[in-house]
Amino acid sequence: MDNQHPDLRALYAEHLRALQSRADTILQRCGLDHLVIAAGQLHYQFLDDRDYPFCTNPHFKHWLPVTRAPGSWLVVTPGRKPRLVYLQPHDYWHVVPAAPAGYWVEQFDIVVIREAAQARAQLPADATRCAIIGEAGAALDGWVPDNPRAVLDYLHWHRSCKSAYELALMRVASRIGARAHRAAEQAFRAGKSEFDIHLAYLAAARQTDNELPYGNIIALNEHGAILHYTDLAHAPPAQLHSFLIDAGASFHGYASDITRTHAGAGADEFAALVAAVDTAQQGLCSQVRAGQSYPQLHLHAHHVLAEVLREHGFIRCSAQAAVETGVSTAFFPHGLGHPIGAQVHDVAGFQAGEQGGTLARPPGHPYLRMTRVLEPGMVVTIEPGLYFIDLLLEPLRATSAGKDVDWARVDAFRRYGGIRIEDDVVCTSGEPDNLTRAAFAQLD
Image (cartoon, rainbow, N blue to C red):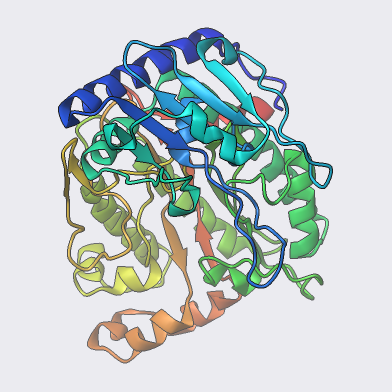
């Protein structure tokens, strides 16, 4: 646990009141009496009794900071204290979930059960009067999650804007991630392999692979051109040209998502390009403001990065022309970012309103993960990148637009793989609140 975490009791009580109010509203609208949320179940490998790492239902951990209690349930009934049905089995094969404790327990009516089937007696009598949220595998004696669309749409829409409690958790997750990023950079500077850099990250974060919010991307040299590279070579390359790390941390079920790119010793031109992308990224972060269209910010990022390509000699045409002809997409093929919170890629990124609906992506940008207009309380990642990916550049070389690319310079940079800079940024009613930069600043 991070030793800088704040006193969460008051923030949590306010957060819970908001969740209870939302539950009351949507249950009344749908003519239902209870919101029932399953924590989830363990899943086992095919033809084996080995379970996969447990990942709790995000709706469950939105209500309470419990992430390791498979088989547990939450029952929310208007006018009553929420009931936590907490599975703490008699088990000498595995670590049993600890007894509920901490700043949150006083807010719940807690019933401890020893077998999963005992939860049935603690659930409301009539399942048809309930909205049951969870995965299909959580079904229990006729209690099958039905995930009503109207309920999910409403809850997801309002989950987009984080409470002060959620932001406090994300600040701690950001501090843990920033500390571990510094350790990973030191390991890179010491000439370590991808595998050893990863171990240095885990040691600094004090989290296992399964506790992290997602699998670390630790990419040296040309591996930075593989957007989701997770192979972790055990031997370092003969020469360290570059290092791209995309890695986060978790705190009470909430995530940070941070990417940095570092140039190796003597890679001065690449270091200059990294600095240019970092400057561009900070400019984009400054535009995370209420009323800003996220897809428009994504399109603006293409123009900004195309200008970086032009200034650094990779293209000869204007930034506008590079965007119009698709040249910029060959170097920047992914979206600008995504919502983040209880999930790394959080919900409702495309939702039109609390009653559902979908806001389409701009044509030609199939990998954008958010199409909403920003509102105070939203947290989004801003992660522009420039890459040297053969699969995308070779088709460009064969087009008429390819004549505007300095291919000799591109070829010289293939050894570096690519660049991505990513921060987690809160939209407020005024200036953006960059959780990531603040976390790194606290280390300085």
